[in-house]
Image (cartoon, one colour):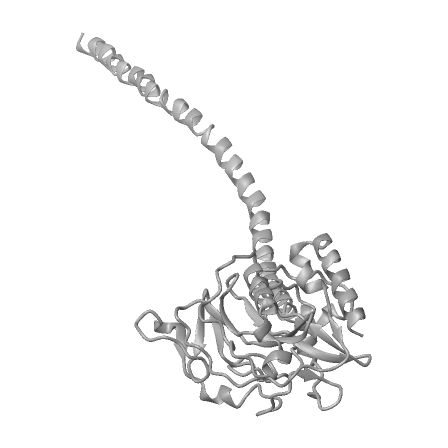
Length: 343
């Protein structure tokens, strides 16, 4: 049995260099014939600065069996990033490891109660508000000082929300004595969104735990000493994942978040169309009036042109007045008639 395990890990070590770094962690699934130990109980370290996301500790599997990967504060790789923890699921008589990932939503992680906001369903430890992440201080432990400002809020009701199996320390889903929780329709849609794999510093953090013999359950009896990372991991920025293009039925729930936006667009268009149509009808009569106004203008122009002509004709009218002067010249005619009367 030990020979087959060694051969499997040797084959895995040979295949890893051939897989791209961005897909190596997300593409390799490990299956084991027995489940992981229960989750240990520990206290969350105080968040030293804003912008850090809590990634709870989990059991991974290495050459000597299960080992504990300490919980750690990790800088968000991009604005809006949320962490979905890894989990073990019982499938086809084997326990299969499902790696964690970054995404716009917290997806399915087997209903495992990791604590600190990860009660098995979603995440209640905080939320993104615009470009900043706000911490729910009813669950998360953050530092003091004025730097937090609007980055903190209090929601005690969230303590009772999101728990599937309160008080349970079982670290796997399904199988004998496992968590009995299947993903909801919404969680399935989140699972089919585009994700970002754990950062290289998260992967190095896991490798460091695997190389630590004291982290193995075989050595510590399921009670590791190094439960949390003492300092936050280094920052590694990534571009936010784009939406997965539409396709099969599995993408329909994913597109459901965008469908309301698509439904609102036609409503706006429908509101604009009735407003636009009357305006167009109003413009059409205006266009019909324009041809009516155009002929009036040419009518006024020919009228204005002949008007100067009668004015020119009226100018010689005073010349007709001297034509009446000969009537005054006829006045001496009676004088010639009076002269013979004097003789």
